[in-house]
Length: 209
Image (cartoon, rainbow, N blue to C red; front, side, top):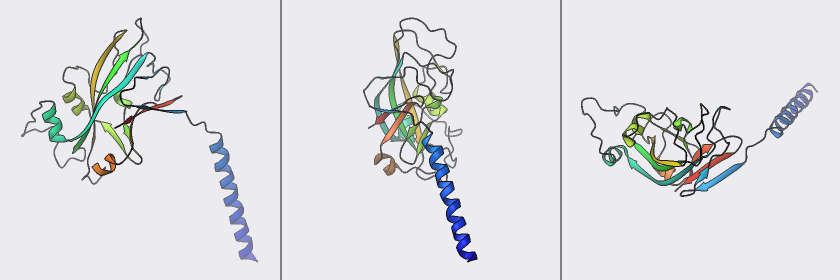
């Protein structure tokens, strides 16, 4: 009898927990998701990533090209000669960028007048490439190599003049042989990979092919 009572109490508790989980989740609003293709001009409008003070209204993002290349090929692509005595990355460093997913994109400011809002513009610090079970980040040093004409680093936001545009190269990196969260090249090639350009109130992402 005691065993039956324990079983009934356990079932009751599990049922209650399940009902609570269902109730909480049903109240969560999932942001609408819009997926765009490479070559499409994506208007950010009033969408943001994390903070209410973000203002990317009037800006658009277009991904023009994408390629996956080894780190040494990436350096050669941008005519960068690494210092053998003081390399950018030591090969035993967990952040060594074995492979680079290099995107070339155009940012455009379609506003007709200058917006003096302090936080208007674009900041690449929130940009990631996402797959089914992996995420790739931009590295500031790689960003500087791929955009040598820019004074500000990847962590610095920027504003464009009204009705102007500018091309950028965004190098996302991954390492198949690392012991910390390795990402295999085959997994990347066989997955759908997205560049997310806003999270709220609308998720906007670009399918990278």
